[in-house]
Each structure stands twice: as C-alpha cells, then as structure tokens.
Image: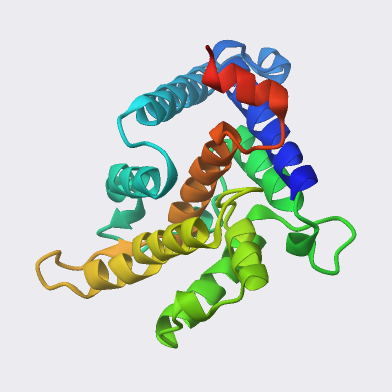
Length: 238
C-alpha cells in the first residue's frame, strides 16, 4: 500500500520534470549531429504540446477519479481510433508514439507494485504489462464477471495493475473506477469498432491503456490519501 503509493508519486514527479526538461533543453547528443536539429526541434515541440495538453486536461472541471478517465479517453479518440490498422511500431508504442520520458515513468510506476513484476527480478516492460492487463480486461468482459463478486484483495490488485487509486480507497471507489476503465478501454471500443456508422475503424488498445495508466498515476498522486506527504501539500495548497 504505502510504499507502492510513495514510489508511484515519485515516479510521477520525476517524469513531469523529465518531460519539462525534454521540451526545453535539447539532448547533448543532438549537438553531435547537426543534420538532426530539425528532428530534435520537432520532438521538443511535440513534447511541449503534450505537456500543455496534459496540464490543461488536469485543470478541467471533473478531471479526477472516474470522471477524469472518461475525459482523457474522449480526448484521445482521434489518436486511438484510426482508419488504418495500427502498425507494429504503433502497437508496441515504439518510435516516440509516446515520449520516452512517459514510457520510462510508466514502467517505473508499474514496477512499484511487486505483484506487477511477476517472477522477473528486473521487473516488466510497460507494453508487456499492458498486454497482460488487456487479456484480463477481455476475460472480465467476455465472462460478464460481476465486479461486486470480486474480493477486496483481488479488487485492489486489479486496480493496482491499472495504476488506479491508492491506499485508503474503498472497495466502492475501486469498483466504480474499474467499471469505468473496462467501459472506456474494452466495452466502448468494441462497440465503436463494430459500429456501421463509424465505417471501418481500428482501435489501438495499447496506446489507450498506456495513456489512461499515465492519467491514473497522476490522479493517484493528487489524491489526499496518497502516501507522499510532501506531494500532497504541494497539490493541495492552502
């Protein structure tokens, strides 16, 4: 509980700092290749835009808990639904589909919970973890599992795997958040892809889940019950 929450809080803050730095300071390696200057500038600009979008979203009314999940999923629609099938690179979130700072922070936040590491002493990569969460999501939806029937322990584990919540969350809060996650990540997308109105649309579930996990990690850090007291004071102000 507490230690996982604290590690995730620290992962969120270090990622935010990395992203801000990446948007403002060119990496030293870019000086070695004068021909790559334009690409570096584009990457920095993209990172700055993404940071601004994230900040703007978190400031919106209702951008917390399950309401925030719905808001983020809605904003991402043009990125996660495409008329062409996602390429292998896009599915693996490689090639700066998500900035490397975000992927590094996401991996750190996932690895904060020992249960997510499995048997590997080195932890697990973000994409591998997302793929196992996808299988679990599909199972819960296909088998029509009643979330009320899931024990407190399994519920806490399921939420932690998706970076939802933190210590002090009640079972009711976790159930509501998990239901929202399943609706936004699995049930809703199936309906969109099957819909005749939308034409042929393809869904990049890995990208959607990665983005929502990033939101969940930040939301958990802002929660008044998060286990990093310094960060709580920073977020809550007076």
